[in-house]
Each structure stands twice: as structure tokens, then as C-alpha cells.
Length: 298
Image 1 (cartoon, rainbow, N blue to C red):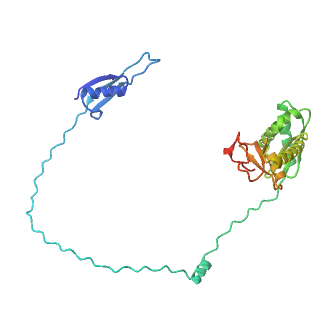
Image 2 (image 1 turned 90 degrees about the horizontal axis):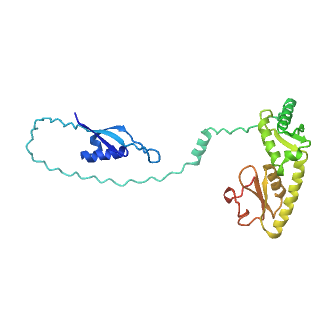
Image 3 (image 1 turned 45 degrees about the horizontal axis):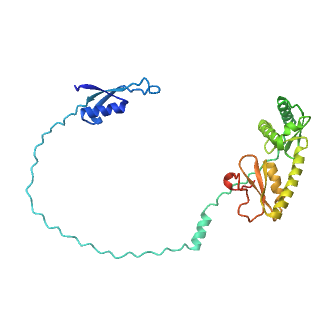
């Protein structure tokens, strides 16, 4: 049985290296048993050295197998091998590709079954929401406003496949917020809350007083002023932080103008709209570029 020796080091690898050096052999020839892995301690204090127990592996000697010598036949004269003459083959004639005859092609087309065409998807008739669903939407809006501490009067009507919720009361300024941000957020939450109540192809809008009507008129007036400025000096102008419906209004308002174009730039729900002359190299601002500097259309 091989004798075992203990070796130490700062870590296991260091202890193995010390064992290989002391026994003048490689790690493959050693049977290693790790007793302690060691520890660096805390802030260099209370260190523990690694400890291993090593023994040399016993290498089994291969057994000698006795084999009888085989009889060797006397050398014989080798008959000369004649090289067979390779028969020269005549070059193959390449056949020219024959064009399919039109009669056969027409016959194949007649025999092949026609490919089935996908039937157009027909949408069924629009099913408006029930009066109970409209009342549930009204109650959800009223409850949400009460929890906010802004109890107000809420009316709900169906207008052209859109459930229009209108809020009136003394908290209109608070519920609208700066540039309608609070109103847009409440509308987003309300759409998520009432999606299970409303049938497909039914939209929902939230209005506080007559804010959105006034906002559209102000936006059109601002677009006319910026378009006139771009037409005069050719410099690109921007309207920041518009929601999708407001951006759509700007694009539709300028779509028939042959001299002025509009693009949306940015990521997320609120994007800026650029008003510029076509043909310029960069119809977007140099600073604060978003979306990789590439304008995108809504």
C-alpha cells in the first residue's frame, strides 16, 4: 500500500504544486484527498492554509504474453504483372436541352389542380355595447374620480362606435393637467379597465369639459403659424410631446400642402412632430435626436 503524505499551501492548487515538486512527479500520478480548502480570512486576518493528503498511484505492469513464432514462408519469385491497357473511351456527346413543347405544357397545366384561393375574411355586423355596459363604464369612471378625491359628474354616450365619456365639475383643471397629460393617462387606464365590458371595434374616449375641442383648434392654429415660418425661411420647426391622436391631426392638416411636410420623431406614446420643406438632407433637429436620428411617420 502506497504511503500517504500531507502537504500545505495558501490554497488547494498551491498545495498540489508543492506535492508534485516534493515527490518529483506530475499531478496525474497522484491520488489527492482534500482535507481543508483553506480560507483567506476577513481583512487578511484569521487565514487558514489548505491541506491535502497525497499518495502515489500504483502503476500496474502489463503481463507478458508468450506467443509462438509464426513460420515464415520462403520467398517466391513474383510473376511479372502486365499493365492492362486502358481502353480509350470515345468522348460522350452532350445532349442539348430540349425545350418543352407548348402543347405538353398546356396539357400539364390542364391536369394540375387549381390552387385554392384564401377566402376573404368578412367582418360581421357591428354589435354596439348594451346599456348595462355603458352604465358600468360610467360607474367605473365615477368611482375612479372619487378615489382621486375629484368627484365629478360623468355622462356616457355612444357616438359612431365610440363610447364618449364626458366629465364636468369643479376639478376640470386638475383632471386635465399640463397639456392634457393627466387626461391622456386617465383615458389609458380607463381603456384597460373597460376592455372586458365593450365589444370588438368599439373605441373609448375621455373628455373633460371641452378641452379636446379647444386643443384641436389651438393645434391647427399653431401648425399654420409654423408652416408659414418654414415656407418663409426653410428652417425645420417642431411641436413637442403630442399623443397619437394629436399627431394624426397635424399630419392630416398638412397632407394636401405641396410645399410642407410633417414627420413624427421619437419613441413611446408622446412624440414630437417636425414640420419641414421636402428635399432637405436632414428634416429633423440636430440636438436631442431620438430613434437613431431617423424620422418616422404615424
